[in-house]
Image (tube, rainbow, N blue to C red; front, side, top):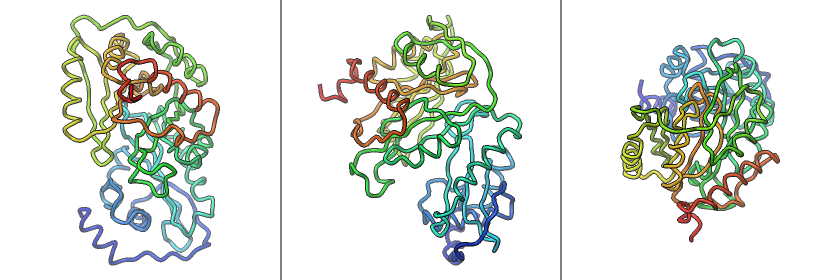
Length: 355
């Protein structure tokens, strides 16, 4: 079955769920996958950008291979009324998962279904061998998803300015302004290790790392490993106009490699570019110097992004309205201050400030 075939079948089976039934929350079974597809269609129509959730065979396969770990809320009448997951997304290290894709049918949004699914997922992680780190991206046009992130035990570590297109949201306070997201991480299995800190961000990283329950030794980044070649892995999210690059290793050819990747991103109409710099690489400082010179600025700290940690650097066509960024905690507001301060002190970011 492809997406077109799935949509035709979903249209022929309109979902009508009796409200106020009792429900159970458990890990998804193969027989639940069509119910999940019906949920996604009921909430998003045919416009959810990832086909997997409309095609039962694909969702079952992704759970079998460990790319997705799914839970469902299932009413006593048999209908799936909610879905939640952790899944492999942008992190270079396959055992760092993102939490998200949660949805609940409108008839059950007054219940605790979303919280119950999140609690069940969090409880599963300790028993799943290999899962090391969990992260989330909570939208900042309201506070609800940030509060859920905190309840799940994720600590704020970064801020992605203007990550999501305004067109994906209704009734924005600042129409046309892309929506920022707050990064949060939760360590499932820690691993003590050294990280190489670019001098420009020593204070910012010390502040963020000191608020986490992790074991790190912060060392000064000194330069490229002689003779090493760059390993820069792209990910293009075309529907959101976002380009992401995992910089696992910075070599002497980084300027040329990165310039080529940026050119491809522009050809794909990317409006937001993000580079995740591996802080386990002694060349991280040189990489940051290059990126800052090309108009990138600080975004945050990413535990276990590469198995070692990462540093987010970001570049935008234009800044979102800062007043549109709603944050729940003093820690998150301090991270926003760190981002703004870096923009303001970087001469290569004057294009964003109109100077």
